[in-house]
Image: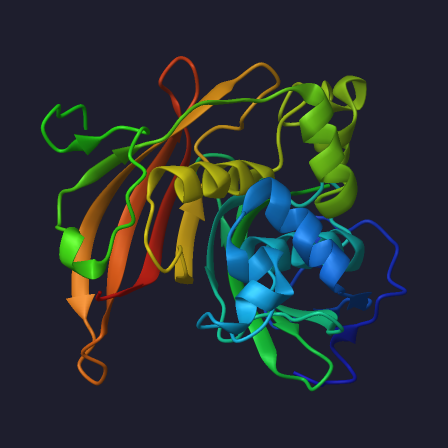
Amino acid sequence: MENGNSMMRSEQTSSLYLEDLAVGQEFLSKAHQLDAEQIIAFASEYDPQPFHLDPEAAEDTLFQGLAASGWHTVGITMKLLVQSIPLACGLIGVNSAVSWPRPARPGDILRVKSRIVEIKPSQSRPDRAIVQIHSLTLNGADEVVQELTAKLMVFRK
Amino acid sequence: MENGNSMMRSEQTSSLYLEDLAVGQEFLSKAHQLDAEQIIAFASEYDPQPFHLDPEAAEDTLFQGLAASGWHTVGITMKLLVQSIPLACGLIGVNSAVSWPRPARPGDILRVKSRIVEIKPSQSRPDRAIVQIHSLTLNGADEVVQELTAKLMVFRK
């Protein structure tokens, strides 16, 4: 995905409408540094399980150490997407598919690389389209911790 | 899905292993009451967009009023699932598909109804299976605010 010409850097600030989007367009987010405190805070509220809450108890689980909830990784990804894909009407998700090949860990520096894979104009409403975006969330070693395919509703100017 | 025989109530506290699960088994969560403060707190950290942050600004958007981030609805759903599906090894998601037919709103009382739709024993590892669970998140009017299909890794005793 490292394609200098099409990759839009995180400095991107202008507002994008449907007319500004094309299949193949890429977006790179800023970085988010994860730590144990964040992992435990999210898990306490939304995913209270030992492997997300307690570094010691997590050692004896499948994760063999504290791991971020997959939904926490999604939340951080969303924050980075809002910042890196500046759609004029906002990022409005219709549906999403998500998988977690490996967990995000304390100390991970997460970045999101996104690519537009499909633009499907609405048949009934000419002012909008469904835009499918594929986003990889990478850790500092460039390993994929999450793969997200989201369908967004995007409007014309 | 209201089937008195197979619906396991939220009082369920015993730990479930793969041997305890069957296709068609259902689980009903407790309720979670959503409010504007929770919606804004989640959005501030993970989905900072006007329709999730500011009741007044939200009026002029597609949502026509403050709406919970879809990922916030997922987070609340996950909390309710952890409580209502007491798997002995925890809820470990491999992947998920999620859609939001309508947003969750301030004042909504959310409940999650889940149903096991597939159990696929691992070919290579006889100690585990992939269990697919379909979960509907409902508001107080029994309208679906979220549909989640998750594949979980579940272990034998």
